Structures are given as structure tokens and as C-alpha cells.
Length: 405
Image (cartoon, rainbow, N blue to C red; front, side, top):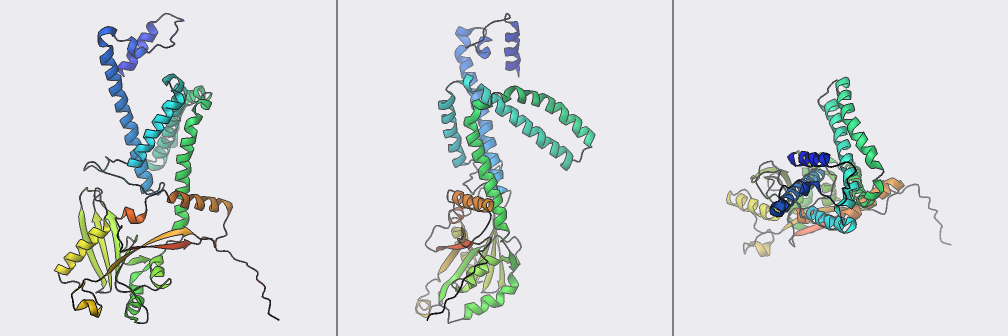
């Protein structure tokens, strides 16, 4: 603030009509340029670094929140400290790096970027004011007259800045491509997730136990795995996704001796490592609940192996192979993880808008982190099962049969 006030005072002291081209007020207020110029350059550089840290931290925070709110694809997020608010996102850091290089090459000088910068700041101010209005009116429920007065005070100043900078819009077309790219990605991801969630149904796990028990005992079905493990999103321990039961029963039936359902909950503590086991049907259907701190990488394969070791030590399960030839040699049983990934089925007849959203969603999804990698399932024990997403199946097909003569 002192620096800005000092520069303003210097400008006011200059004679009327003075040409300020190629004049930087920051360096002009230096009392002894020959002695203090280099320290001031160092000070300006440090100030730039501090300002850039605000931009970087803000970008990381916004993308992290966008991921948690299903506005952005799943990406790698690292936590360099024990405070959850301090995060590092490698992919966003590289985007910022390339963006800064591109901006420098495009504008070349700070003077050329002034118009674009001023307009961007004005837009940010207007957006903040609009968000403040929603917060005061719909969260705090302040009176309409009070909110209106506050809004008018801010909008009067900000709108004047907006009008003054609007003529400079053409000079920031470079940024519009990047900004529309971000908005497009968030819009597509959010809308596609809403369409996906229409087909996410949970059913009572207890009702499925007779079916799972019968399949496990059916010798006419070849055994898929001794221990079959699925990751579930069901927060309620008494429920399971309908698509998991479809995967077990309706595709190639997956007969197993024991069915495991694993759920992961992320806590606000950095190093929480807890788990609970619920033997819904002892020895047949088991649910494992992991409670992991936000700094703990969810390496499900490693964590699950530790759970098995603990349960064996407590004599809660026996993981010796059930095959006669292997059992007599005390060979450990086989385990298999199943990850379900959706793809857009050709058997769809939807509107142009829905088709554009879903096709864009699956194109973006190819660039995102896979679920197998996100959960640390990179072993040969993992099977990725492709499931078609059918939003609106093709219907009203008129097919005429012609009998052979």
C-alpha cells in the first residue's frame, strides 16, 4: 500500500503534460538510483514471486474443490504438509508453467498485457460481488434493502471500471480460449456426472445374500476367483450398487467362495489409518471400511493385504486355497479385484445436446487418472470390466420378417 501511495504521490508531483512513456513510477521514487536500484530490483522480484504464489495456491485450491464437487476429472493431488489446505497438483502446475510462457511470448511486454490484465481484474471483482450478494441474501438471509445498498455501492465502482476496460476486450482474446476451455471442461464433467448418477442405484445388501450364497455353491458354474473384491461407493454399510450385482450375476457369472466389498472414507486428519470389518454373511460376504487420512495414498491392494493378515492372525478367516491339489500343500488362495469402467454404448438414441455432453465427457475421461491407478490397483490381480452406458436405448424399430420360399 505504501508503495502504491508513493508512486501516486510521485505522479501528482510531476508537471502537467509530462510524457510517462517508458517510465516506471516504482523505480522513479527510488531516492538514490545508483545505490538502491539493484536492491529495488531484488525487492520487485520477491514481490512478484509472492504474488505468483497467491495465483498458484488459488489455482490448486479451486481445482481441488472442483474435483471434490465433480466439476473436474480425477487428477493426482499431493499434500506436502499435515495441513489439508496446503496442496500441490502437478498437472495444474505444468499448465500454469506453459501458460506463463505462452503469455510472455504472446504479449512480449508488460505494457501490452496491461489492458488484458485490467479487464480480467474487473471481471474478478464483479464475480466476487455477485457471490457476495448470494452469500448475504441466501446464506445469511440479510434484509433485501441492506443487501441492495451494499450491492449498489460495489457495483457502481466496479461497473465503471468494466465500461472503461470493455473497449480493450479484443486485446485479451488470447485468454478467452483458455477460460472457455476451463468452463467447457467443468460444464461437461458436471452435466455428464448428473446423467451418470441417474443410473446409480443402491439396493439392500441383505436381500442379495441368498443369491450370492447360491452362486457360490453352484458347482455347475466355473469358479471365477476364490476371493472376489469390488470397490463400492455406498456410504451405507447395508447397501450395494445395483451395477455390482449386475456384474456378478448378469454378465459372465462370477462364482467365488467369498465376496468382498471395500469402501474408502477420507478423513480431515492427515495420517488416519483405520479399518473396520463387517461380516455380513460370515465367510461369504464381507464389507471392509477404510478410514484414511487425506495424506494417505489409497493403495487398496497393499491395505487389503494388511487386513487379510490381521484377520488371519485373529483366526477370523482361512485363506488357504480350497482347491484339493493346492490345499494339501497349504498354498494361499487366489484374490481378484474387479474395477468397473463405463463406456458410451452405441445402443443410444438421445438428443444432440446429450450426445455432445456424453461424447465430450468420455473423451476427457481418457485424459483423467484411471480408477485402477487412483486406488493403487496395478497388479495382475485386477480386472477392468467395461460396462456400456445406455441412456436412451434405441426403440421403435420396425423389422419385417420375410419367410424363406
